[in-house]
Structure formats: C-alpha cells, structure tokens
Image (cartoon, rainbow, N blue to C red):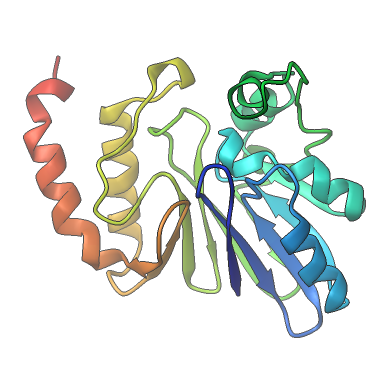
Amino acid sequence: MLSFVNAPVPSNTFLLVREDGHCIVIDPGTKEQADVRDYIQSHGLTLDYIILTHEHFDHCWGVNYLLDCFPSAKVVATKLCTEWVQTPMNYFNQLYYNSDEMYQIKKVDVIVDEVGWKLMWGDNPVVFVNTPGHTSKGMCIEIGGCLFTGDTVLYRTKPFIKKRYGGSLPVLKQSIDTIYHSYSGDTKVFPGHGDSFLLKETKEFYYKYFNDKKDEMSD
C-alpha cells in the first residue's frame, strides 16, 4: 500500500495494490492526481475502484481526473455522499484558484447502502462501516484487516464538525464507539490526515474528549 499527501489541503490518498496488479484508490483529494496516475501507469496496474470516505473536496477532488485517465474504474460512496458530490459546486475552486469553475463527480457506480455495505475485490472482502458525525455522509473502510477512517478517527485530534454538512458531535461519538466495539485495539488505522497508528493509541484521547463534552452533547 502507498500513500500520497494531497494539496492544497494535506489529506491522504491511499493506493492499495494486489499481487495481480489490480488496485484501489481511496480519497483522491488533489485536483490533478498526476502522482497517483503515474504510479498506476508506470507499474501497469488496473484501477478497479475509487472509494470515498466522505464528500469533502479534499477527499474527492481528484476523482474526475482519475476517471479521465482510467475510465473503467468504478466510484464507490454512500448514498448521501453520492447525492452531494453530484451536485455542482465551486467554493473550493473559488477558495484556492479564484475560479468560478463548477465541479461535480461524473459518476458513482456503487452505492454501499444498496449492496449491503460490502463488496468483493477479487478474493478480498471490502467492508464499509457507516460512520456519520464528521458529516452525515461518511463511512470507514476495512480492507485486509486495515481500517481507512477518513476524518472519523484521526490521531489524537479534536473532531472538526460542520453542522451545515450534517455534522453532529453526539452522532460522531456513536460512530467512534462503534469502531472501538467492532475492531481490535491492534487494528492499523490509516486516517484521512496524518500518519497511520494503532486504534488503541487514540482511545484514551477520545474517551476524555467526549467526557469533557458530555454537557454540550446533552443540550
């Protein structure tokens, strides 16, 4: 597995490669994913899926670029994420490029809500975990015993919630509790920002954070 740090927002894109040359991209957040494209092409890989943990532009801005390069790739997202990313928007182009260019993802092929939150990638099960809270549209992804958490679980980082995107602190707590109840503390976590870590390394941080916020969450 390889990781690429996006720009202008330093989120993570992950490239998972099977021994037979098939691959998956998770959260392509740079507008032009030339480094990911070059790696796939130079190694003769076949891009099967582009999977989105959620709809924020720093996790999906490069989808159309990759689809232009690899048109047979299938895009995977939750139903709510699908609806959002297929709505034309330009706030990120205005913010970073002073451009009125609109952006929407060309297609979403697999809506996880409709396939039982699981698909097979060769002999490898890909399990999707419904984890709203950071937004109402997010999910985590388990592949090969590794957990890709987007912005749901980060390393000892205070949650970033925007209610305009359906974010909710109580809902996020439920999602993080679900993760900790479902996965071993030794599970390797690959977050949407920052370096990888073991799930147990951040449990105490979140326990304290939500305990400190309990009055706020009960309002």
